[in-house]
Image (tube, rainbow, N blue to C red; front, side):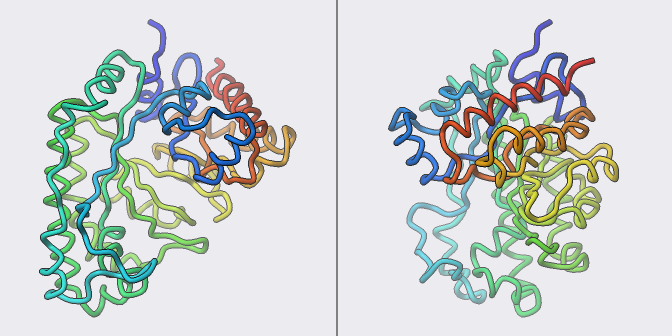
Length: 334
């Protein structure tokens, strides 16, 4: 039986190798400035992200992000600022939070689900996690203080988010079985995690332990989305049942081969150093050679380790895709 877009994806998410090649995907959308440059270099203008994926011949994947904010939520005063300072301010903003999830029965979704059933596409979704979501409410700096200054409110916020996550999972699983989910956290920077294990265990782990069994029982692979140096916190995630991570940023020192050696069953997506994509074939080929042992190990889908930057020309990107296809096949050669 020949492989499909979905069968390749699901095999990798189970830690296996497809029979012909690895998935060829771009998990993140492209920067606006990157698309603007490419349109000036010949990319047809006006395409959405899914049309661009088809234009480049990438495997098609459909993502839906369940945003806990309604469209009417008050805006923060500046980037990084918060909307909540205490229980009273949280009560004021609650009417603007946790909108009803879509039914996925209209618009483009029936066709997307039909493509998934036929094997021609993968479907995944994103939920704001238990570090990310309080930060959205408190703001970047005050969030880190809130672990100490507002512990009861932190727990309330995550309990409410947990209830919303359950509603979202029920909504999408009523019409299809997504192939994986990412829990958006971004809880590391270039030198390690932003909080210690004690705070993770107190404020995040209990809620992971509630939602992750629900996801895994439905056959959905659970992936963390976190930038920065995530290697020290992989064991934390494994303890609560999470199965993998993306995007594996090389600039933060993340090494997919080292992770594979230490965590044989860990799933990975990303890992290709975006900073070499404008340096030509020799540099890009060397980067794929670096990744090849992990690619051959199963459970790893190579992709750009974050959004392709605008310093990459359209010709550079076509070359990158050509090499990605070549190494996706080489990884599965018996």
